[in-house]
Amino acid sequence: MEELLQQIKNIKQEVTAYIANHADDAEAFRIKYLGTKGLVKNIMGEMKNVPNEKKKEFGLLLNEVKQFVEDKYNSLKQSTQQTDTNTFNLIDWSLPGNPITVGTRHPLSIVRNQIVSIFKRLGFAVAEGPEIEDDWHNFGAMNLPEDHPARDMQDTFYINKNPDWLLRTHTSSVQARVMENQKPPIRVICPGRVYRNETISARAHCFFHQIEGLYIDENVSFADLKQTLYFFVQEMFGKETKVRFRPSYFPFTEPSAEMDISCLICGGDGCNVCKHTGWVEILGSGMVHPKVLENFNIDSNKYTGFAFGMGVERICQLKYRVNDLRLYSQNDIRFLKQFTGAI
Ligand code: DAH
Image 1 (tube, rainbow, N blue to C red):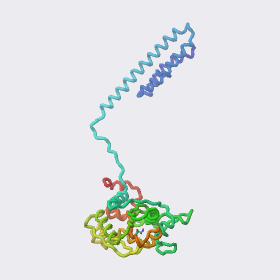
Image 2: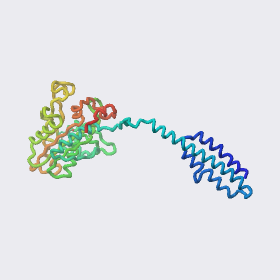
Image 3: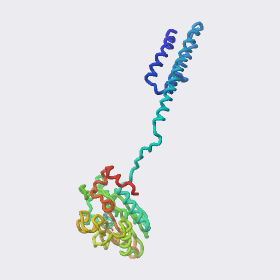
Image 4: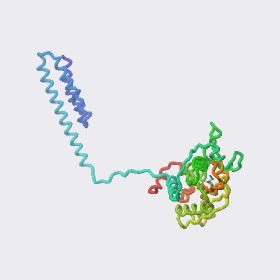
């Protein structure tokens, strides 16, 4: 009994010490001392064990302590409420809020989306393929047999585990995937990332992005190819942009051509980007080689087609004057946030 008596007497001290340390939390105080599992209730539960002749003494003491704790709780509650209203009045609610900074799209995504939307308006659908490809889809089917010297044009990353696997060197591999699964008429564009074993510098990177185009139907001619690409350039770079085609070579097209546009950086006067020629190459193109069509059992007497492949980084460079390829993958927020507002 002595122990219980001492416990009751201690409460006052304990409560005072507790308030000194936790003066800002009235609710925690209530739970600890006055709640259903609180200290006061606990001791009240002990009353049944107190012998009858002592009950009065204990009861009086306990009531007094309980009153003491309740008073403390009430004043604690009042003082914390007061500080709450004080802070409320201290805040100037008319101040504008802190701005929420929203991320921006990556410049390469912006340019890819612009290109895709132009071709979509011409009726092209979007097709995608895997970045890890097999030799057949990346090379063989595109008329680059194993010993073909043109394979050297594209330094390939092979996958150790299986020498038949590689990181695709161009999005032309998606042409193969599409022809495998669809019958003409085919009209697709294929955006995606490609890989080449190049030393990283301002002008070269070991990965970059391309957009491939493929159109196969009856009577598709080189005039269709030119008209489609003229339209694209005018929509993408503006009506004043000049275009020229130069004969070229790709194993998967015959005839082949590269397309240049007048340099947007210097307006054709000559600068570093156009190597002082006034022209910048933006894509390779041509009429799909009959062998490529036959690889997919497409009758090359009945069907013809054109194809093209362009580099997204190059187009982004011309549109936004980004002069170092490494900037695209460095994730420097100072670079990336300059494209705010573009969609
Ligand atoms: N695959 C070529 C490259 O990566 C680009 C290309 C050229 C794609 C001509 C084509 C094409 O579809 O017809 O350099």
